[in-house]
Image 1 (tube, helix red, strand yellow):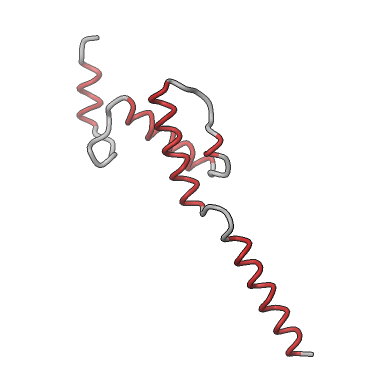
Image 2 (cartoon, rainbow, N blue to C red; image 1 turned 30 degrees about the horizontal axis):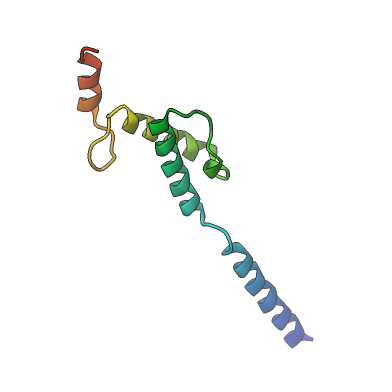
Length: 94
């Protein structure tokens, strides 16, 4: 009886792990969302890309802000916010 329960538990655990690995990881989903937002800003699109489905709202908000800052030229070569670039763009003449 114990051997049967152990075998069943191992099989269920194996199936659970196999089922979880079928789709993209959360990090892959976030990266796909980031890339979709950058592309969307370049093309002038609006709305939430379908690639962002499954991204937590707080993470999505950060991704949107990061994509917007990049689109405005407020990030450095590493993709980090650069306050000086933001200030420079505020004083530029159109």
